[in-house]
Amino acid sequence: MIENVLKTSGYRWTVLVLFMLVNISTQILWISYAPVTLDAVAYYNVSEFEILFMSTIYMIIYIPVSFIASWFINKYGFRVGVGLGAIINGVFGFLRYVAGPNYILVLIFTIMIAISQPIIINSTTLLSASWFPESERTTATGLSLNSLSLGVALGMVLTPLIVVSFDISMMLFIYGLYSLIVGILFVIFAKSSPEFLSSDNKNRIKTISLKKELVMLILNKLFWIIIILFFISLGLFNWVTTYIELIVAPRGLSSIDAGILGAILLVGGMIGTIILALLSDKLKKRRIFIITSGFIAAISITVLIFANNTVIFNIFGFLLGFGLLSAGPLVLEYAVEITNPVPETSSNGFLMVVGQIGGIIFIFGFERFVTPTGDYLPTLILLSILAFISLILSFLLKDVKKENLTRN
Image 1 (cartoon, rainbow, N blue to C red):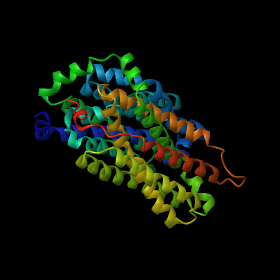
Image 2 (image 1 turned 90 degrees about the vertical axis):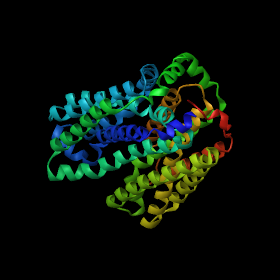
Image 3 (image 1 turned 60 degrees about the vertical axis):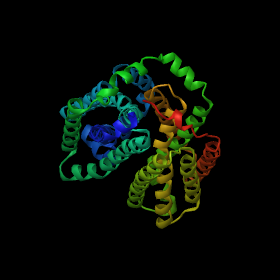
Image 4 (image 1 turned 45 degrees about the vertical axis):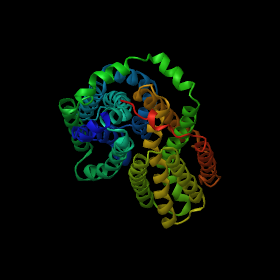
């Protein structure tokens, strides 16, 4: 009955679009300095490290704030939680423009933006569970995660164009204004859930304490497998996207080739996310598609060890993105199912923290794991081994019985 009513609630797509627009703004604000690092160095009169730190701070802050964010969303609901995050994101995104070339102020405002990010992103599976029937949830989660990739892609492409045509200040104004507008729109038009489910959702969320949630997650063996998969997959993706130019340079490829490869990687991920999410929802299976994405990722990273031309890099870069990012919605929804009745935001938030830790460890831990000539071949070999370990572990997962898939 609830499934049928949810399907007739066309407003679910409005809420999803609003959420995706907010997601896009978080990623644009995060990545805004990366494509124009040298311009930002000149504008703020600081070092390259200080500019790069404004991107890294997001991963650092995500870890401690995530647990508070999940508690806040569980207590006050999707609309209030994400609404607060969206407003913080928009206000401080716009204040970065107001601050002008004052680096200290901009850094403080960036930290505030980073604090808002887990409040928003940790609500991904809660939105799917609150508004979408089981047959559409992985698709909804996939679209939400795709909006994050789209935000990164837009930031990488549009930022240099705006800065070249105008300047850093105009770029900050445009992104800040967009973030503020979508934040206000979300607060006005978003709802926590269809009206007939609101009280049920609130009662369900309040039945489990934070301490009990953590105990249930820690004692869940299947969840530990998911933790390892998420740690390796997100760590690998963050490392490849961060070091992409340094990976291809020893193989004779240019910075332009690296930029194209990065875009292809994201496109592959976005396409893979939609295809596997739709198939997973249609067939009501998670395990087989998690294995499929892991297989594609493991083979792709292995081939890239030996790649030495643009065509091979682009083909298997696409497949690597396909494999790594397509696993995202599958793993998040599977985690929700195997940890029931733990609230979606808690399992979602826990995994996001693990992913951020993986990104930090991979980025900094493998910084100098290179050959004497500067080739990242040793790192690629190690990542290939880790990818195959993930693939093997994914075979230990078990599909959840259909009666356990209903969350509302």
